[in-house]
Length: 270
Image (cartoon, rainbow, N blue to C red; front, side, top):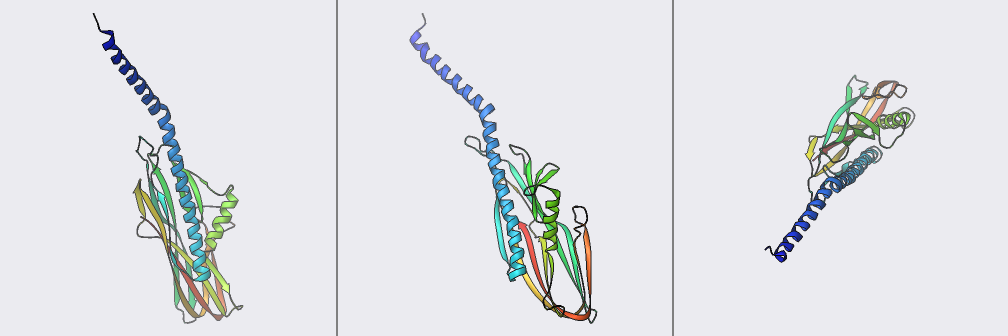
């Protein structure tokens, strides 16, 4: 005859195990994916904040260099991966890449036919997610504004229309070369900005990356100049990447003195 008192604890343990397995199954199939997605959404929001703040850092570096003649270093931290939660520490990963995109040429010719050429670089940077737990949403900065990317598609983060993008990008690019006529002809000041990709251009993984810029300002005085030629954004053309350029040439009938302030901004990531 079976001992009912001995069987009861076994049945109770089996019930507890069944409840535990059921709970774990519901957790892994229902709650876990949604929790991972929510953690990934929060991670991408932090990435977006870092990218937007670094875009502002670039604007501030340009203003500090051209208006005050100050260089310096600025940086923002961006976590490459996310999605880790309690009981599941698996994280996604990402990659930040900086690459050159275009260039602007400025030339000055002096009265003794010496040619002073300034090649100004343009660069962009992007964040691309990998193996994430939500949508493949990334970010790209170029020509002064931030795009949200999903695969091959992209849309501006802070602007609603093409005309707004064109206005922002043209203002940014045209601001890289600024001519100031200080006393109606005899003394000219020229502010030029170069935005280049530094030596460390790519980083990947799921840790914290630091995207930074190093700004350096140099000054040069060129007396007896007879010609100034520079490129700018063609604001009358359709918006395109790379941008369409228009060349401006100024021939001075009376030689002028040109003070050149060049702001070199190198972007890198580690």
